[in-house]
Image (tube, rainbow, N blue to C red; front, side, top):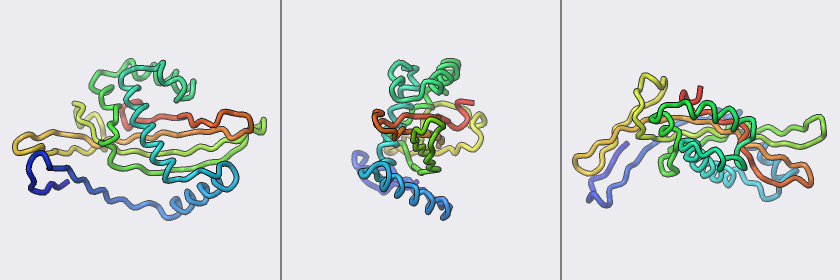
Length: 196
């Protein structure tokens, strides 16, 4: 974190994330992205997918934190939504607030595993696992979340806000069987230690 000396209205927060991707996973991801483009969807781009997944993550996490499960029915798989209802409604308010990720607070996005498979009925599926790291100012004791980093962000001359870096994994699934609506749904949701 660093901030240049500027008038308060022009001051912006800068966060630098250093991460090294496993080269084998990076190559594997690119090969699978090429296969999706070549055999399933000529308009598929891993960069465009990642940007759309980031927007979906921000939207779904906000609805999840507000317990608006009826609005998630078209976005999240039914069996996942059923489990989430039980888990989220029993969370304390500060944990619910920590589920919500503002799109401007997402500091890093990683394309994880990509899988292409056929089921016993011959239907074609693609799953893409995405990892997200985001900052939250929700008031959660740091000992509750093992592995969560705590940052202090200076706002202007005097105000200091404490934020925690949390992680989440969302698995997106799309069926590519002919005649099926071409929508991505979320087949799995994990939020660091919040939804155990």
